[in-house]
Image 1 (cartoon, rainbow, N blue to C red):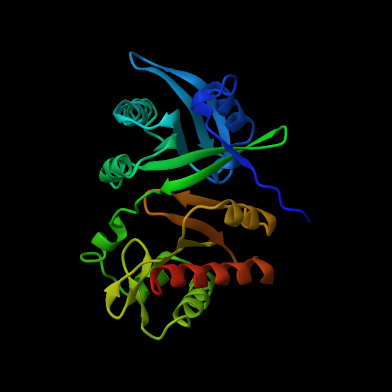
Image 2: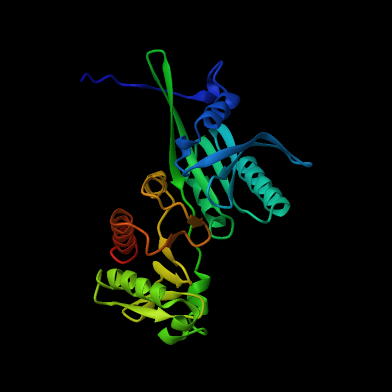
Length: 289
């Protein structure tokens, strides 16, 4: 295999490849952003009294929408204000969805990255640096995530201070079979580290690590299934694998950064083994970081 260096191309100064061209490429292939299975909802979406939103994507499996604004060249104050304004308009018009502002620019300076970071945690923002490369007669686009969503403090952890129950409470709420499945799942989680313990709360079964709440795994037993919450960043790889092995009842909670997977006694060995692998990954990211 031969090596050939690609040439960096700055689209801001390109005679034919403009912002509209980048929009079209993302509209054709949304996987370039690595946000999972997202579907194009609209292009050049008119915002009352505020211009047009470049792209609007919607998650195929969860109630999440992504407002995307593209700027060639260096990002500036107007770009940041514009994407926040579009995000705010969309969330007010469609409150049934979680909304995420997505900013794309060829050059995001450290100064503006710091400014954007100030909003993150209050306004969900993702920022990408766009790079274009030419190799012979081909142009390739690379989107590098330079700012990801900041996970905000979990409401579960706040509730845990006041809503503590015991196992018998959940035995009354869920079926015997689902409590047995819950125990089986909890055993796998606790086997990751002897410092982990279960904490029974009114709305979920969570975890503590050395006595401190850390709900990187949550369990919610029902009559016929158990909802398993796993705190991991949303990824194409996880989405594809869950689909492939037959976990069709899944949700992603963008506010708390968790996958919620519906687990039943009918799940096979392959499904459960992958679930346990996700437990291990979440543990490594939360405890070993």
